[in-house]
Image 1 (cartoon, helix red, strand yellow):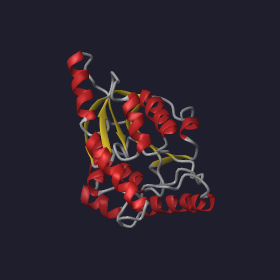
Image 2: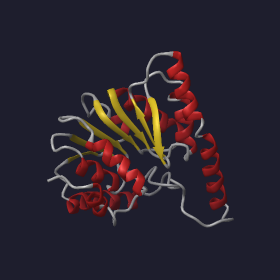
Image 3: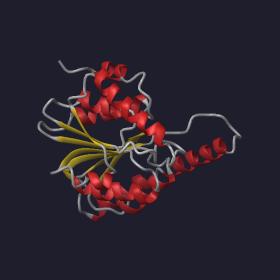
Image 4: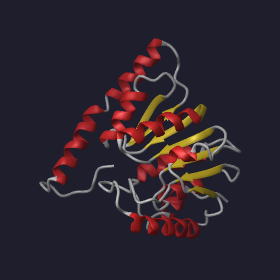
Length: 239
């Protein structure tokens, strides 16, 4: 018997990670709507919080692929490199969390960088969740190359959109002027795109406008991060 959203979120209550309840619901719905015999790919799994949601919500026939090198770089906010010891622990905890949630046999973990994993995962992707390196270059590469693997009508979710500078610049460069992915909306910083953008100039113009409308919220998030970094205010890193 499949678990409800509430039951699924209870499974990840104690799993470390950056995912609000609304974002968890977005992942849950996307996985639940993945076609039978489909494929879900997650770029950046950390300790398995989002992985568990995806694996629990999806139909048993759906392949779940988690791509994360657990290499000690791009580990989290302001943790770009030099966390090799923590990364080894992340890998152990990731597997333990999946086992505790009862989904370890549902997930294929590709412990490689995302550009290497491209050659290790065959075929189209029905649901793609991008939460990998947030610097502009790697984020753009993930959105572009893995986005190309999303089949027509498929879904791409991107974490830290209009929050991380690098991810936002990648979106502005590739998706705002793009001709394939339609901006559906967002749950805080998790954006939802669908590979079904109509080819008409009107559809494309509307798509551009809806994305650019998020920039004031992006400016607010950057301002909050600056104030936190300068220790002027206390608070959680916005996600």
